[in-house]
Image 1 (tube, one colour):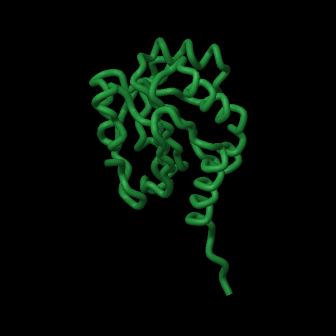
Image 2 (cartoon, one colour):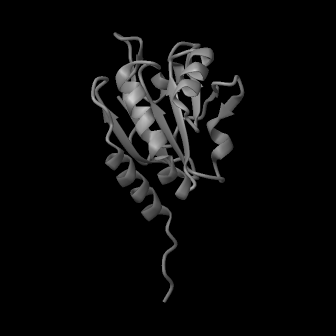
Length: 162
């Protein structure tokens, strides 16, 4: 079962497509994060979905939200995938132990060997503020991301005084 809104996002450390290690807790106190779990690099749905995110990357940048993709692919596969498609965001390899982070977030599909399509929007305190979860064959809509980022902004907006 996927993690619920309001729960503390489990910390992890994974290599990105360049082999650099990324730790979720490094963003805590600094900036919100959108973790985008996707099944497999180079599949048509994953390519279309991540290309749509790249086309709308300004939506994340405007709100200072770090966009990060995660799949069970190797870092070498993710590097080729990112270069081919021109992604300007990090892709993390949940390769070994196979799907360990996906399992922690409750989105690993044991019978398929990869994560379902799941996004977790995490605030600067490390709490999950929004999630978007679909079946492996169904793409997440960019409008769902916009709504999730709007919810995040509403939670972090300063309260007017007076």
